[in-house]
Amino acid sequence: MRYHAIDVKKSDRQTEGQLSEHPLAELIREVIDARLSGAIRLSHGPAKVVVYFDKGEVLFATSNLRAHRLREVLKQNAVAALESFPTLMSDEELGAALVEQGRITAAALDEARSAQASDVLRVALLWTDGYWSYDARVRVAGDLRVAVAIERLLLESARHLPLTFIKSLVGVGATSYTIRKIDDMPLSATEALALSRVTQAGSEVSFADLATKGLRADEALRGVYALCAAGVLQTADNKTILSDRQKVRPAAKEVKQTKTAATPAATEDSEANLLFTRLSSAKTHYEVMDITRSADMIEIKNAYHDLARRFHPDRFHQSELRAKVESAFARIGRAYETLIDEKRRADYDKSLTSKPTAKAPAPAKETPVASAPNQKQSAGNRAQASFELGFEALQRNQNEDAVRYLAEAATLEPRVARYRAYYGSALMRNPNLRRTAETELQAALKIEPNNASFRVMLAELYQEIGLRKRAEHEVVRALTADPTNKTARELLSNLTGK
Image 1 (cartoon, helix red, strand yellow):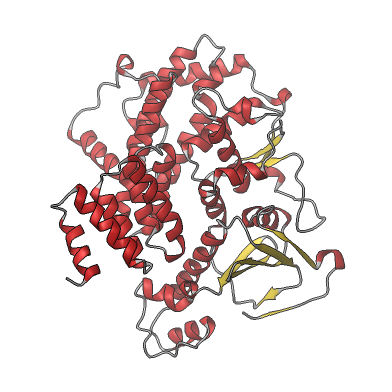
Image 2: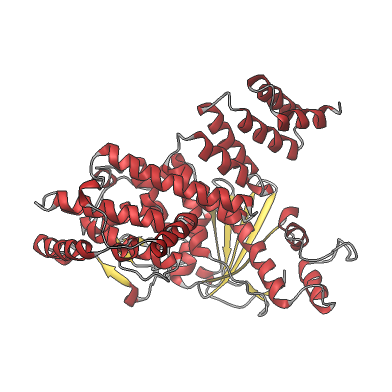
């Protein structure tokens, strides 16, 4: 990797520490907020990673792992025939040669480099031990700049870090937060609810305050940590790690929440009555969500998150309108669960064109969301919708989308074995996430130990990483549970050579 050093203040030259105290997500968060330049180097056993950035923008990330070489990324995506190019060529040389010979377009190369950097970051963001160092002097070549959805990667990593690790990083006392709205942030149901609770609290809030009415303490902890990592929330005691400079965010995007700024109950009730009036005339899910028929997925998510922040029943726990809000929010939830699922939405759109829409859904048939069983049902519906999206993405080999949707399903309903198993199946397609894949598959088998299909998935994982004896053991257990399982028999034959 090409770079050069420049003179900077001594205090800003180098900083170092342990990932167990300051993981990569926290370091990158400060890079973005303080608009820092330079490089962060990470060491995790034999694996090494370098993340380059300029004025708060992540430029690129590279590692010494073979799976993260440009050649491997191109092979996985079948972008170009690479046999004629020497294996010792650097990534820069290989990319330039491919473009020069017309084997790949410059745009396709940029896309591959973006995927390469994202894969490096996705792995390094999950490291909970090792070492890091920051050097503000490093500058990369001006042409090395790829598109990285870093906010999304930060959010995803926080969802998958061990809870015990997050607990070691986060204080349990009351904390004041500054809230920044990010319109296209794909928040999970738990994160959206945690954000709603923080918004409602107004000033200092503890995890004990958040952990009420459908949100467990552990969920609140992970949700708030994820929101902080993604930059949606910022703690008042915003301590810096990499430099003495204070973190800065655009003032126009920040809203400081204080008790004096909190919405009065009377205003909340007035807004709720306006919602009831609008819903009384709404005849379609689109009208319920207050969006157009042409709204894309981001617009649907934004509309739902906005309605959840304003009209979640928890905001009306002392209001006489609570029951009506519960019914209204149940209807909003049903509309969202239909429209956010591509297949359900397509079927629903067909129904709108095939029959009249004279009647709005009858309120008497709505399912309230306030009680614990109904909240569980709502979470189950969202988990099922996410699972279906993830499974379809898995079938289409859209692995990044599959991991995202299946992770959400497994998070919402961790005791549903198939969610954990297929999440593991998606993870195992990435060589650098196979350890996590093994954990998810084993978790699924703890729930359903006699599920032959899940045993086969785990056996295939062990076969991929060269653990043939373990693979054979799992196949034998699969056949014990289901002697007619054809896939298990073929895999056993392959493993034993019989």
